[in-house]
Length: 204
Ligand code: HEC
Image (cartoon, rainbow, N blue to C red; front, side, top):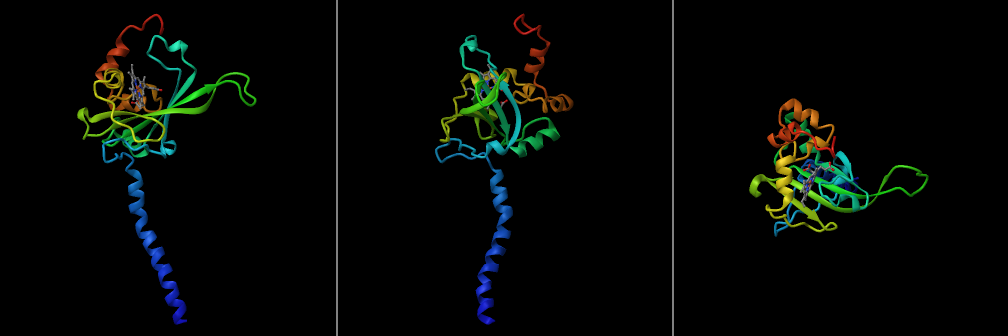
């Protein structure tokens, strides 16, 4: 009896430790915005279990767009930032978006018409981090390797700043979020000016 209870003790202790550690582990899992020692953004491997915002198909702002292969762009945001947006209409510090590029294919299985998503290409990230100059940063991952900050002079920054509907992000293309930004009045001056401008003939 005595020996058995001694034998049980470490097991109970282990269970107690595991339960006590659980909140800490969960809290750690939420901190998705992490950098390597040399300042590269660590690839968030679990982004596919975040909140899905939208898929753009063949969206482009470049004149040669028609010559590119068909593709989808899926956008995900970390769940904590999404919850904050629902309440405030804007993004909290440490928000991280992943834009995932996937090939659009037509020939496969029983498909006769339309497109389905196939192999994944590169992933890009857009993060809100008060430690970065300007408060936002862009990163382009190659595979799952940590990514270097794209210099602030790149057109990622100027286009998102000038045309993103809310806080440098393209909320106008995330249909569940746009009504919230409208309601909370968090639309950017640049977006409102774009909307007020007469549409070109190419985009009636
Ligand atoms: C000329 C405008 C323009 C430029 C330049 C641009 N983007 Fe974007 N970006 C967009 C649009 C439009 C969307 C919405 C895409 C969608 O719905 O698929 C977007 C969405 C994104 C998102 C999803 C989160 C968000 O902010 O809405 C990421 C991440 C992103 N872009 C990264 C980049 C990176 C990295 C670069 C530079 C290498 C870049 N973008 C350059 C227009 C631009």
